[in-house]
Image 1 (cartoon, rainbow, N blue to C red):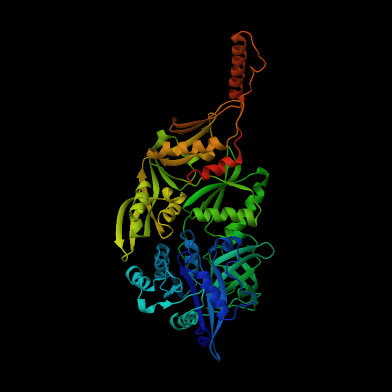
Image 2 (cartoon, rainbow, N blue to C red):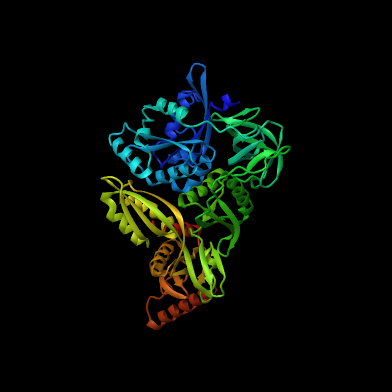
Length: 601
């Protein structure tokens, strides 16, 4: 058994977004003959339409490869490709929990980026063997020497350990495979033969139910055997077990050290929890496997069906998507303007955008997503503290002692030429505690403390714009801070629309209210009477825009005569519009809710 386990290598590929992880994974598949030249296409493991279109990895993708080092000497390589964007660090942490090593990819033209630092820290916390490689050395702007200096200065990794490769030109891939075999340790020998398998991901299949992605730590998952989930004690039976090559390939069982999938009789997505331990029913293990750190959602938004009759379909679609994306949480809520829907939690704005697109494409749902918010802590005068996700539920201001907003510690790496612009952006977003560290002669690392609400909307896009794409950012939660916050309400024709409510800093309320009012003025259709769009803070109007009334020329039939005839008709029209305004209701179009989301672009 030891000889068999010694030939297994479990590793993940980690990097900043767009540094070449998927391209290296493609080369591994070709060099190990896991996929033929005829079936090959770019981003083989990225099977989602969104991943192919955007050129990014959203979901972790396991695959088994067999590497023939010498005649008669073969190794089983279990690779898990991981996302690179800061929003999907949850996927990375889950993948690393199932590995013994990690391949760190650094772009030779861009160097060490903020998310590179975050992913290396995750791997170090799990005591994984890290193999650094400098990718894209074929580019004209490549500067491997600077990358090696940054590796030692920022990541504390020896430059001698790095390999120079170009995945696109197929340079150095064989050296990487050799390094994986030589430097990444084999899975540890189990203490006993009891079944222990870590569930590191799951997907839902409408025909086969829940498919669990597992790393087997000890024992074996034989087809037909009864198993149970350690946490919930839910018992089921193994219907099929197998591995990815890269498509699902059934086998009789998975044994110690293997990475693959298990299909059981479980059909409800909520029954399997990511990070749980699968064990045998007849001889269960005594303690669960150490899982991984579960991240809490950082951004919340309302998701509603455009047609209220589609609520049940949306509910089913969200429950299936939650299994495929464990970081996505949702609970039902009702809005006076939009009807029944869900309050959903996301890891960031890109994560929210991806979930929104997946609901539309994969489940054919027509949905509206309201303005993003974060979780605030509201301390009441009676001593109670409540956590608030929906600004519309903020208590009466007379009952509030103070409000705390979540803050984050951000690491921003930027070329020194753009340092002044980045500093200005940070201060504009109410950042403080600025510290700068020189990375090398061309780059600087900035540490800053920022309100989470200020960065989830547009901060990352603006950072990329002002640094011409060379700036990068990573962040982690840093608790809460008391600020002078208030609820900004939008009133249309004197009625509050709860879907437009947001919590903002009091100093920025008028500016934000003016932006929203101006945008709504463009999308709310004209009526036969004037519509007032107002922004209010604590009952005080801070901004106003008017949608002009549709005017009928009632004096057109008057060709002459005394002026009093025209005045009489105009006064009669004015009185009619006044009555209409008192009883009329303004129907807000669905485009208005989308327009609010884009109000800061």
